[in-house]
Image (cartoon, rainbow over all chains, first blue to last red; front, side, top):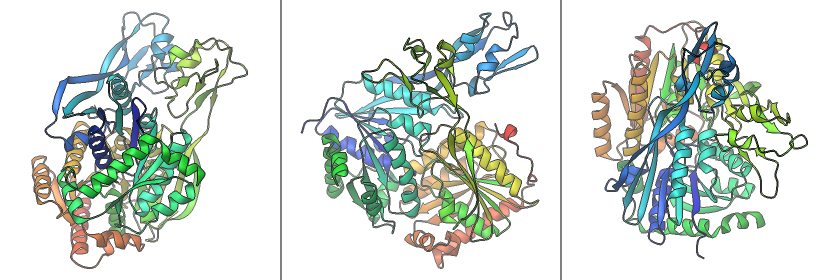
Length: 296
Length: 307
């Protein structure tokens, strides 16, 4: 079956270190043999996708991601305090006749600027990170990278998603951040299918439960890839069967994969693994997985 | 004395090292599991739940369809893509998972249709561990956006439960963002768990850069985890830590026995044999680093200070 135009596949997990980046990078590689494919690294606090493609060529220069933060013109400020009363992030504080702006705490909602009756607040762009594009053969890689010390990972994720939408490709594969809070939510939003990568450990099983609740809550079709199968005793398959979520792939643990994974080398020459990635790709592009889950 | 275990990369071994350290320090320590998105401290330490409290992250917003006049004035106010008009409807709704709770839409609504509502965003727990120590942990409702705030709640509660002279072990979340900064703030010592692999090293260096930007806590030590898989990565890990001026407390080999000992309800410190010896050696070095630091007395943390 031909993929719909611009299929978006998000690779997420709950627990970190289960193999999201490994699965996303190799799915993208498998996909690029068939379709124009973009790998999007949305794990902006710890971007590692590019690590798999050291020979990739930069396309253009890195693009700064900015958030519009307030700038105070003290000469027009009447210290009325309206700005501080609407800010819910503690980024604008009024104490007596002094208004202070903490731009690093600002989420860029613009509410203080709208609330200012004297025109003392304007907006200025503050950099929160960068996006950059690279190419390796038929595969393009878009990386979002949050600046050190910043807390606005969502601004970088959303900027990378806008860039993702502009690029003329057929398949988009997102490497998402761990966890189930705002960065993960924004990273899976807009995806056609979410692949949850789990490993057979008690920790991963616990976190998979939260990830399934997040994905189900957003109403996105999903399936589980069991990574490092045989490495632990936790029954990921049993959990998936109970929840009616399909297991769409299984990658056996072995020592040579662990070693080359540590070295950061691609597993292109691992035929069993690449075949499994090809199967996972076709299941997600066909969108069969969730329907199978529903009828089970 | 607050010791924060952090790594940058997920899956580097933070929770396992935290649990083993808690076991090494004994019943007097308090463990604060600050990975509220993916909290595994309770599994690692065999927690028996004692207290469960609701956590509220601050009011969110919703639209009352009965009062909404579908004027559309609110739509351009939202800069986060959280206000959407579903197909076939002219009444917008707010997607709570995407809403930053800024209230910009509220200012534009003349019909009074946007209402504030406080919902439970998670739970805060206090448990007794099988080691006799206390564990403070939490669970964020999937999709909630206030994990940094919940981390602060965990920290403050752990601080209130620690007795003078005892150690608080903070298990930080992965990454370098808001909840990580909330986990690191006010720590007396940082244990950097560096996974000996290409991505583990890169992500650990981003964490070191964050620590530097916060004013590096003196006495930061590293534990290199999963050594022996790739000699190049082991060597690079030692090199980058030396360059960063971070002392290596120990190296823990990749060993399936470590996973097995956790599955049997114990910590890495309990594994017999050479891999366990390496764990115990690393823990005693970390303990020496703790003992040599002039820790701050508990009771110092307040929610305001940690903001």
